[in-house]
Image (cartoon, rainbow, N blue to C red; front, side, top):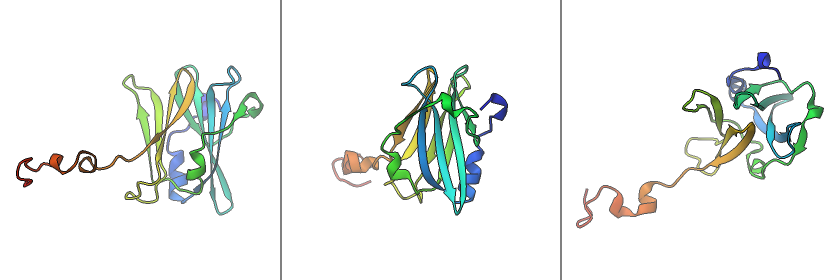
Length: 164
């Protein structure tokens, strides 16, 4: 995947608009390091169409390169097991996605929401970040409403009377 093959985050538009489901996720270490994740391949399926979205670490700028094309020389990458959370997300479609730009203007984060509806808190979002030429994955879960955590005394009501 050369920089001229770099495509914008809009590759996720095709996935979302066609209702494709996540089919598989593969993680790969780069040729330089067997511990550093340099490539993540998200595989989506719709009927009989198999669609790849590759997230690759740009080692020069620490940015994420998104492409539909697998690298031409996959043999340079070492497969490593993906985090177990992906088992929960397989067969889900994308609800939302975000391109994250850091304070220095670099595209070094991406977040994908695999929920089926906005009201479904059971499925977490996945966030990808790049630092030191390595992609990391984090879960983003919906927090309970502050009144659920803090109790009714913190919902704007008077602490003595309980009235708002």
